[in-house]
Image 1 (spheres, rainbow, N blue to C red):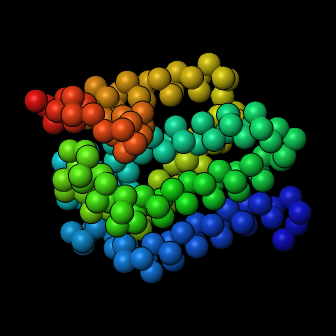
Image 2 (tube, rainbow, N blue to C red):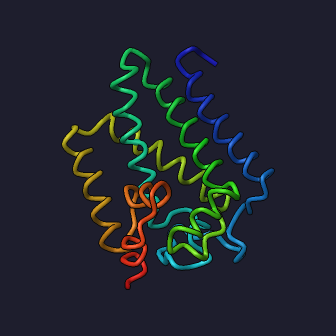
Image 3 (cartoon, rainbow, N blue to C red):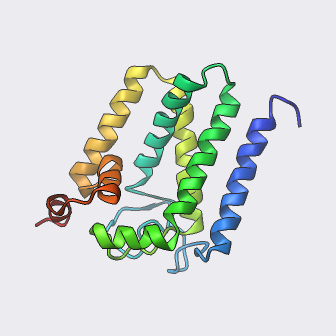
Amino acid sequence: MSKATRPYWIVLAIFTVAALWLLWAGRVPICTCGYVKLWHGETISSENSQHLTDWYTPSHILHGILFYLALWLIARRMSFGWRLVIATAVEAGWEIIENSNWIIERYRAVTISLDYYGDSVINALADILAMVIGFHLARVVPVWVSVVMVIGFEALTMWLIRDGLALNILMLLYPLDAVRDWQGGL
């Protein structure tokens, strides 16, 4: 392992530790339906967050873009690889917290996600990978493209599924009945 590749090996180790932690915590490896789909587009479903990608995948790409921006602002002198390690650790940490019983129950109590029982391990790992993709994209595309992606993904998911990164954060931290009613189509 060379000094240049060490961060990428650590990223791989973070993926492995996250998977093992989630399995230890009782998360199912794959959908209990018995198969893995590349895409599952039905949000009000017990299979949501059980397959590789879904309508919440764009929010994880946005995590990567936003983490890239934050780390570029506060740790600009750090190499890309080490900033990726930090971003991956934060995203993996979120996946572990998001799949704790406390957060799952919070989602079910304050959002319309009554059928949400946590992510499968494969979905959580795909979410972390989506963040890594967003992080890499933010590095190679012009800033204006990153801005368009953030606005576009948020607008698209708000329009199509009445949810997105901003609404997810809002409803976890400060749930509003009006937003929950709108998300439920009332």
